[in-house]
Length: 582
Image 1 (cartoon, rainbow, N blue to C red):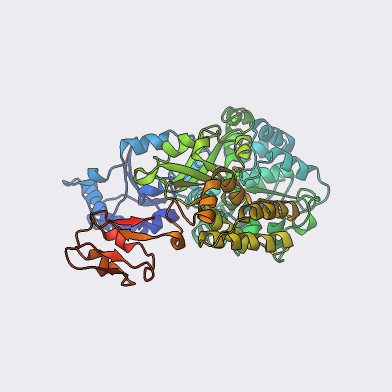
Image 2 (tube, rainbow, N blue to C red):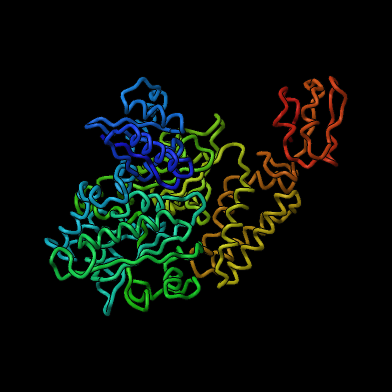
């Protein structure tokens, strides 16, 4: 029998560490010989903390485990009367998990990420051994080509082509770099993979190194991911101790090792040339291409850069064959994709589905639909470099070409879901504020242009929009897109352009009618009390911080808008639906 507790970042934030300690102490006091192991996030972040009891072929899963639930689980383990069943996972959540096709996430939430033996027991490091003993580097690249694996960092560039270009480039040494600088708001795929299955990323990098002819690898990971860094360091140490990293792998002449570089959290360092500059100790700023990193990368040497999810897929492809991976997905987008579901979604977390599923299928299926029964309005795909896709286009397939046709991009896999209460103008302002702050400043169009666009959006959300603002936003967007050096600048206007394309009427309402139909932009809101519904209970007046509500007990009250701070407390506390917000 084995007990496991999901201790990814989401689980720890929900209290998993305390549950883990409580279960360990309880079992120790009871004299039960049963280990309490750690796993990463299985993807059901909305159900954390998650505890599994593995007893032979049977696995019992308990969710939203608090101290009381942990005590009931301990009673069950001791064979006492208990109420643990009330915390058991629901069948519909099990079905949603089993409806996925997990390749990059195949071990996440299943194995102990700090135990190399558990990874090896699931065919870990078998793929690199096969490569080194039985395949030529060219044959490895050909298998990746057959798979159709494209870069999962956002660009969707064919992985085999990058590997082949780096292999063919003269000179050395050559470098294998893992881009774990995940910076999109609402994205946490790479973090979860490293926290839950670091050896898969290491093995993927080893296979790439063998194919390219590299002896040194670097993982560039955000310093804001401390748990991921700790588990990756531990995994590297274990791999070295087993002789899986070092001078000679499996008795061959191929040697390879990996080191970690913690980045300072600059979004622009997700761009590969800016990442290389940061690795070299310079300010993270992009440069012109060509030459591409495959020809002249880190330290001026041929370098291959892929992201975490890309490398995590590689061992599975080499074990199962490229054709098996290519059998999933669509004609132009093969395999599966990991998505982080956030926003107004009922079941937020990580999912992995075959390419070709529609946005609607994911939102209503794996995502469990919109929270609180509200209407589905849109999704932001691709983070701040992506775009907004309205509910009317929710039957769009998830693949690179289909998403590009909407004005959005796949990106690294962030999917921010919005409901009817989301103001699209404010949403565009939020993402542009992010890219404006994250601009490295090298290009005037990006550095200054995004600031001017943000100023316009802030005016519009404050009820100070003017005629011509929409046209000015479109003009600035074109100049920024055409005048910026890297993809951060080129794509920065996308959230604005797509919301203008699909929700232009909301911009017009803000500018011409000084009205926010989603009731999110406070300067545009007005509050009034319906005299027929108001009972004069005085609760709203007692909660009003601006003392803007007056009236006698048991008689209708009134709001003085000159004193109202628009906090919304009156509407929140009113039990008679008497407060009108317009």
